[in-house]
Image 1 (cartoon, rainbow, N blue to C red):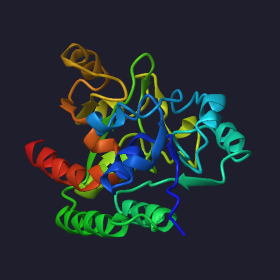
Image 2 (image 1 turned 135 degrees about the vertical axis):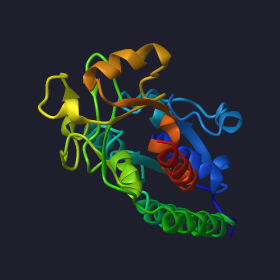
Image 3 (image 1 turned 135 degrees about the horizontal axis):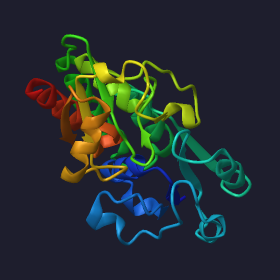
Length: 257
């Protein structure tokens, strides 16, 4: 009997990139507009809206056998609608760099029938284990990691970004836990919170909000004694195949600050 390849719709940018890294690119039949990596390979994959506004009927017409979603990035009502016509819904939720090991295993379990997937996943896992071991915490330092402006928004300490930064001893400010889902994971700041003036490092990523040189002064006003650093948002927030590179980048960044 001939093998029937899966038809995968991926609504998670990091996992879309992971699917291609594992050799599953030819099986990907749908993506969001935010699934932009690997650039040359995803251009031909149909878009079905954004992570929060998926075009359900267009996705239905593409007849996926599997859809990959994420607790943070996709709406619960979207997932419930997908369950009505997609045979397998794969729910992901990595919240720390080490969780990528379970993510790789989860994708292997779903698509182990495709040659080479397991071997590529093992290679990624080995690389990640080496980088996790090499990334050790330094002196505890409070940092403010901004993800949005108007209003200012930051990250709770139980997010992937925060737990990645914690690998080098950087504690995201404020000391909040956001819970399993919802706005509390990405709290709004008004600039008058007690203690914000004590922050000594501010990180300005280039995504999801594209902070640039013009935003440095405004961020500085939140904590006048802090140093403001523009950083690579993808390496500090995307998981999947970027996890090991993100740890390497973080070590370099910590040494420079």
